[in-house]
Amino acid sequence: MSTANPRPGAPHDPDAPGVCGPAPAHATDTVRQLDLPLDLDAVRALSVGDLVTLSGDITISIGLPTHQRMVKALQAGEALPVDLRGGAFFHLSSYVMDGPDGSAAEALYMNPSTSTRYDSFMPALIRGLGLRLVGGKGGLDRHSVAAMREAGCAYLSFLGGGCTLLAESIDSVVSSHWNEYISQFRLVTLRVKSLGPATVAIDAHGNSIYEDLRLRAQERLPQILANLNQQRQPQP
Image (cartoon, rainbow, N blue to C red):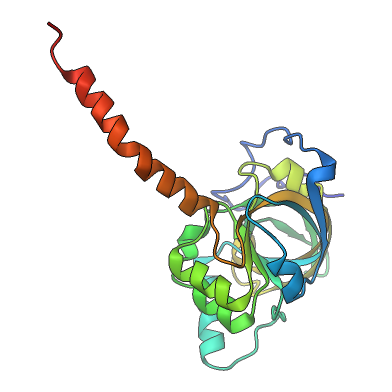
C-alpha cells in the first residue's frame, strides 16, 4: 500500500496533499462497484449523482503539455505509448518514485486537479480515443459534454483534497511514459482497487450536476438581487 505523502524533495505539485482530510462517510449499499474497462452499455447505465468505485487500470496526468502532445499524436495518426481506447483517463496528480533501475516503482499519492484547465483538449481526446471515463474535479465545458454524449463517456468527480482516501486504492504502477516531464505531467497508468467513491457528475446522456447548479443559481439570482436592493433602501 502506498503512503499519502510524497517523499522529501519531490517536485512541487499545486494539487499535492497538504489539505487532505478524513474520508467522508458513504453508505456502502449506495456505491456501485465498477470493474474496468467498462463497455458502452455499462457507461450509459450510469446516471448523474451515482456514487461509484473503480477497480482496474486507469491512466492519469495533469500536464497541459501532455494533453497537447496526446492531441497532436492523434491528429498525426500516431499511436500513444499506452492504449487508451475505451479506457479511463483522469486528471489526477501523483508522484511516482523510481526504482534503482530507473523504472517507475511506486505511486505515492493521488489527488484530483481542475479539469476545466484542459477544456481545449478534451473533446479531441474523448472522441479520438473513445474514452469511457474521464474525471477530476470541477467538470468540463459544453464542448466536452457534447463529445461525451457522442462517444459514450461519463465524467467522475473525485473528492478534492482527498488524497489520503484515493492513495489507499493504489495497487501498483503499470507503466509510466514521457518521463522527461515532471512526475505529475507524465502519462502514468495505475492499477487501482476500489478507487473512490467518486460521483458521476456528467453522464453519457449529457446530464450534468454543474449545469443543474448553474440553472438553479440563475433562477434564484433575481430574488437574491431584489432582496439585496430592498435591504439597501433607507429605513423610514
